Length: 170
Image (cartoon, rainbow, N blue to C red; front, side):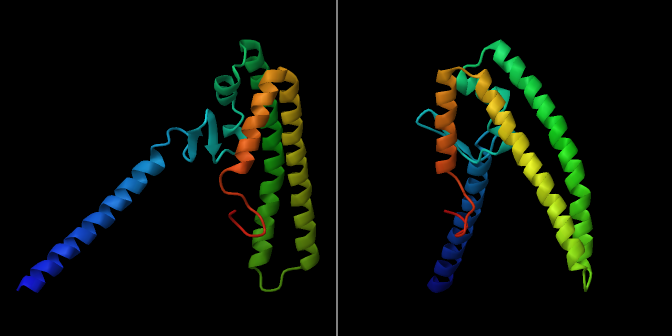
């Protein structure tokens, strides 16, 4: 009888620990605020920062003390970037869909697969060039102190968080 009670109590404790573990994990995952994965460290933000989350005018205004004119210039730049990016994505999406359809076939035409991949690759290169150009133009808007802060943030970003590479997560 004592063994049954012990087993029941231990089972209940294990169930409670597992349940609270899941609840705690969910709270911690979503407690990061509007940008999950970001946490503050030594006055810098680190973690998952991709694309517009990293260089939004709000982020840059808070971290780099942007003036109103700088914010306006960056907003105009971002609107232009968004339009150009959407054009490129409209070019990429149908190609990806064609590729998916071809790869579902038993014997896809590999020359056509290559041609589609080259078109997707070309559009991706254009997208990366657009991002690089946006970064260069933003650099012309910032003063030297702001550029230095942004460079520190970028270095910190590259150092922290998950990175893809030959070994997967570093």
